[in-house]
Length: 173
Image 1: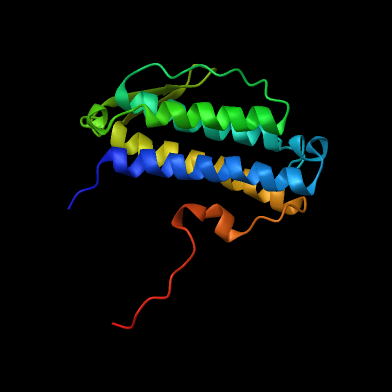
Image 2: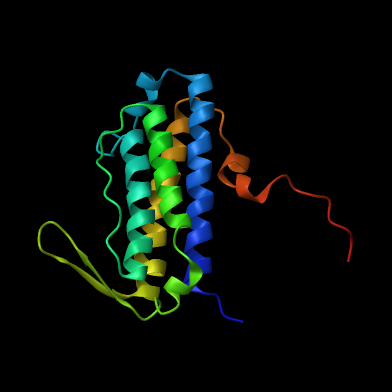
């Protein structure tokens, strides 16, 4: 059995972005926004708001590159939990708009990632998704989670994996 790039990307991005959106509700119930939006794990790391922006960018840009289109532009101007929720919603809506058949040839599609300094990488779609997009996405998702947790927000592993629902009792085999 093979797994499609659609199945390896779209549900993964959607689940994590939905979780991130929900973490903001817990954060709002715990601390003032102003105490969290600029929070970071280390002085040289980007703050919480940027972690949300970069997770969003990685997901929407990743999907767009895999289908060979220009991703929707989102200015990095969010300054509140409400605006971060809206960004998650817009990113989720874009990803949901991509139908599986549009990604049918994405494993071999050339993907070029250019950095502002003129350097970059060339990938096949498969290598891009597995070697760059997913690891980069989860770096920012995990960092956002860690910033919230380090600042007293009551998030735990079940919040990270909430798409699985509550565990069920399994019968002996």
